[in-house]
Length: 430
Ligand SMILES: Nc1nc2c(ncn2[C@@H]2O[C@H](COP(=O)(O)OP(=O)(O)OP(=O)(O)O)[C@@H](O)[C@H]2O)c(=O)[nH]1
Ligand SMILES: [Mg+2]
Image (cartoon, rainbow, N blue to C red; front, side):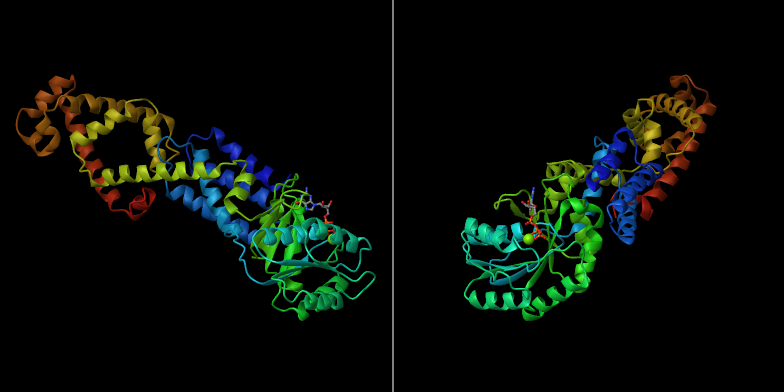
């Protein structure tokens, strides 16, 4: 299973979730960890990511009308974006580029794609074949260079890559962009490392780009680390993003080597190369092509709910405001929602049912109060008022007194909560 598939399956499990509580998040994070780990993303990185998600999901609240799934998707998206780093904006300036990578990763094709990319942006470019191990490499790049309308240099039969590189870079001194293709191998062995090191020594300021195929998902991370250790890489190009891998490899490679993904290869044609766009890439992984619209929707909802929370904080709790809240809560199940909002999702069903019964009674009692009484509870100390309210609501005087006393307790708790840091954090008031 590739990373994208794993992420999508983890998110799909949230479809049925009605609230976001610790249990939901823990379960989700478990699937997420499984998906990331199996794609060879580093353990520490995975743990940091899931911890971050847990904290974010539990300390902020999904605004009304937003499903837990959309809300968590957004959080996951934001964290993954942090992980792959920012997008790449290729600078239009003089560069020497050395492409490296394992056998068949797409180096030669990418070399020609890069030449075309920079030429189309007004730069002069040239290609050098430093692949000294595969006999057909020379002709392949020569043909591609012709297609891209780019000058080409190579020495057929020469076995010393550094020698070819030196001659080629000399010849193309006046070119702004010079791209050097190198040998592939089935693993990064000593011979390849030495070859790359020698070429690198000749051109210490060259960009050293690792070309990784998206379908190498599982081992891309390790590959990037190995190349990075051998010849400090400056960036990664992920090819074959149009294939089945869905780019799990890119995520691993970029995070493992803490090197930026620079370009994405999206097909065999020379025009199939794009500068890396994190939101498009992560959106693709999560199976949400228009992730930007989800993000802006979530942000809008969060902004709106912030306003509500501010109002809640400013509000003085009295019978009047309490009554309004009760009115808003009308339907069964709302108390459960309120508890989960406050982070107490494991309140027993019986307690909730009893609570709702009680609240219904409170509603009738407050309904029999005058406007003045609702605003100022002190008025209830005046003789006769309690008896009148009891008659009006069909309750006993004892019921009314019990309600007033519970209300006062609640008010105290409410004021304490209002000043509580965690509560503020939960509602983003702090
Ligand atoms: N679909 C798709 N195919 C690609 C992409 N990039 C390269 N390929 C194909 O992958 C195959 C290998 O590409 P090469 O450029 O020859 O790879 P290489 O790394 O130079 O290979 P060696 O020199 O043998 O190590 C070719 O058939 C390419 O057409 C891509 O982004 N998408
Ligand atoms: Mg090649």
